[in-house]
Amino acid sequence: MKRDEDDGPEVLFGLHAVVEALEAGKRTIDRVLVARESGGHNLGRLLRSARAAGVPVTHLPKEVLARKTGARVVHQGVAALVAPVAYADVEAVCLSARRADAGLLVVLDGIEDPRNLGAVIRTAAAAGAHGILLGTEETVGITPAVAKTAAGALERIPIAREPKLGSRLRDLKSSGFRVVALDPRSERLWDSESYRGPVAVVAGGEARGLRRGLLESADARVCLPLASGIESLNVSVAVGAVLYEVVRQRGRPEKSEIPFRRLERP
Image 1 (tube, rainbow, N blue to C red):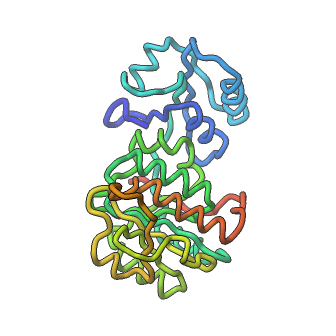
Image 2: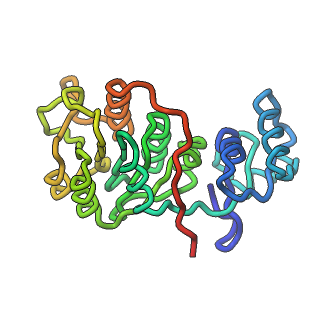
């Protein structure tokens, strides 16, 4: 997503992202923009979804669409004017996870690359996680690149900001969650841990990893084996490996919608 102007509408771009937003129905979409040169069977799905949601569609030249999304953006010939994304309420996200039979939360601290965050969001949604908690210190928020990389998954999983991750992890532990941190210095392999009960998977940023205080708050630290000469994995790859170990141990994730409450944008 991007802003046309500081006080203008946000622009959601990319075919999958727009279709997911239309079908999820959780955000106000004012209008869908389609480049006249666009085509293909996937465009039919988008037009049907827009019609079902009562959203008008405007066909316009590709160069005009490029000006709205940004010249360097890969918009796939599709964009939508949408209401701003509001973060979910952190208490509501945690409550939803606590009420689940086996809650699964992803906690991220210091993620600076928006593409990494977008990839984690999509994987967490696919693995059936109940929510994502983002730290605020040196952690990217939901940016246009995040939305593009997540390819519509922003509509499928609640994302909340948490300025006090250490306190939040302690609260989760007291409510029965097992906190598992990704730590490349650990000798405990990711698949030797049990993930069958409520779990919070915690990962740090590309540069510094997890802060010491958060590492010390974890019940367990796990790592992924690396070949000689490779010091670390991309954080989205590492988180994905752990999340799908959770899926392997628990079985196929449910497809039902996860209820959550968004914060109102001031």
